[in-house]
Length: 112
Image (cartoon, rainbow, N blue to C red):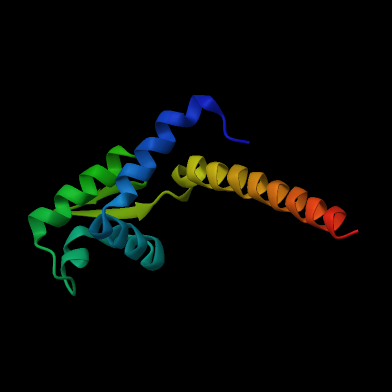
């Protein structure tokens, strides 16, 4: 069930992941585990300043954490930050399953 206290968190997560480049950066971090910011720039078509900006927004939303090692900053995904989104999807999944079950019952009664 979606808690109203997390409505702001849900909005933050949705807004943050709505940007396709930012979502791709998050997905890459989640897939590869801890990765340096410089590693995110390599193999992508995004400039270092743009990657840094996206990382800052992901960090502000709690979707990634940063750890400094020497001159490099390494980023890790924080899957727990997706909880408000998962809760919202679960809530509406249940909502629609109930609605479809009711519709199916109604159609079955109409056939009889």
